[in-house]
Image (cartoon, rainbow, N blue to C red; front, side, top):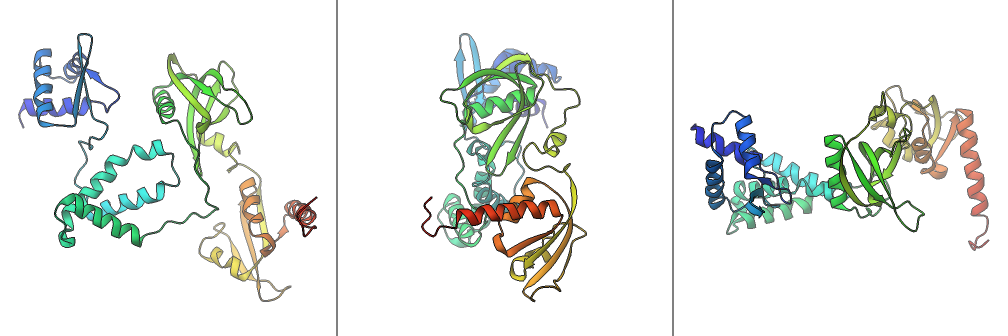
Length: 353
């Protein structure tokens, strides 16, 4: 492979995607640092020649500097040829993530989804379409008609996320620098503006959360990304609290998914039709499912070692009268109090108070 081809390939790999752009001098410096012996004029000429061959290359000027970038819709340059199975997997992933991920996060994968459609159009000519794009559309439509991904909980609508603000936060997190947020608290009438030190991003169901510290305070905060109205990257380095670990923070129960909470031996009575799924998707490795001896044959006794978390309590409440907590007694008492309050709420047939 010629040095010119290798150099030009490296140049294409250096270019960012719009709206970010890289100047010719910056590209030249990066090539010199990579060991290529080339002049700035040659770099400029190469880029102009490449642009004539690659319609997805864009250029602009900023004063005397010439700027370069891939277009927003450019397909990934280094992506290997997808197999049919991989292409179908990408389509299924797109279908599944549509209801789970913020639109901005999903958009980052759109180029790979497009590659999958193109691949299917090339390898499945049996549809008899006139061109690859039409064949890919036919395959995609056929695939979507035959595959479904259902949520395990009540489906909710995803809140709108400011994609530009999220991109700034992600970049600041990657570069370990501070950023300034315009943030509207849940019950506030106007937003606050303050610098933050980003520590991590956590997806919990439909919601994306930013783990951070604010200003010079050491306590860790959790901010809902959909409440960030604007973000601006700062030049100051972000400070990470001593000993901070994102996994440890999650395990502390900050998001309701604690794995460091109290370990308990959970004993339940469940109706047989409700408990049937636990035979295939167990609560724990030591789970025991057996016929309950003190009630009718319609009930099953379940014993398992689990962590006592709020998520577990919500899960149990979701079964209503189809589950009875036997142990631990503190959890049984909590469930009984909830049931009593519910009985009070539903005591009136009219629903008025």
